[in-house]
Image 1 (cartoon, rainbow, N blue to C red):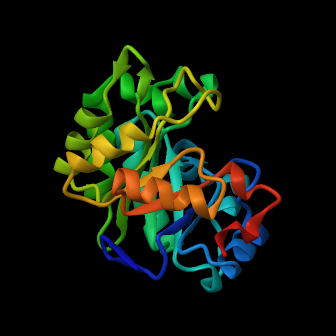
Image 2 (cartoon, one colour; image 1 turned 90 degrees about the vertical axis):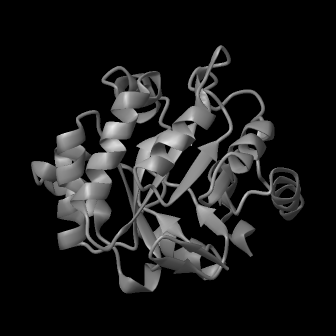
Length: 238
């Protein structure tokens, strides 16, 4: 069991938000097999405030999916904040998560996703805008360790995010330049946990119960997020 902000979870195993994957049927299946928290596909804050039908349809969920989080991304603090306000009012998810982890160039080149980690002031402004825009919704962040091996900013970023009111951080223990290649460095998760006063969720290269235990025991993280290992294998959560 784990408490994050206003949200109580019966399990510390989370389904990662994945574009083109974590639609409603898949989320329901993963909840059935034991995921303590599931996320929608990440959605554009610009699409939300424009009330783009395709974007809004990606947010829709049923109560049987709760607890559920909606993940948003964007580069403009005001727009991202307004999108969070709209989501809270119209959809009422348990959690709104800010995506600071997507490494895809079409997202990062605008300063969104993990591109925000190049400018921690911008990252902090976006997070602050979201926190200030909601009333009773837990706000979390998913991020990477930094842009590259020579630009690791996860500890400093964690302090910035905690200071503006973020309730928990999921760290994908790779850099932006790594994309999804190479091995996740769990040492990053361990160090972030040691330097944080909020729950830290580990993410990266957990494909089995054995690796789940190894990550928890080594990093002392509060929970584990499963992404690619759940593809075609939703029973991993059980």
